[in-house]
Image (cartoon, rainbow, N blue to C red):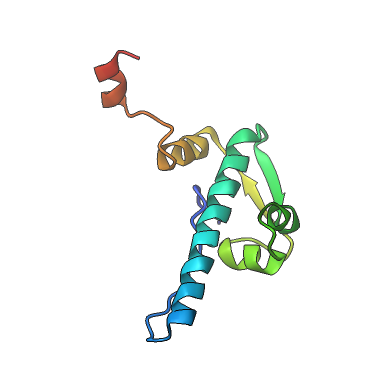
Length: 110
């Protein structure tokens, strides 16, 4: 079962090779960008049942669908299918810093 918000699958390298370390860091940065983009797409799509294709996401970032597939957990071969509730949307908003807590709302009066 897919849990929202989408979190990227990150690679790990702790060896002495600086080139591999840099490539791993770049791959992890791209994985974070892909996950954020997907979470934003989920928020802007009003449908409860959603399908997001890896080829479409890859086109946005100029990478292969394989890279997107490796960065996103729970997806199939060509896409990720989701059932998105309002609670899921709130969780994504909170994770992205877009949802104010009750205490913050009371303090600002909004």
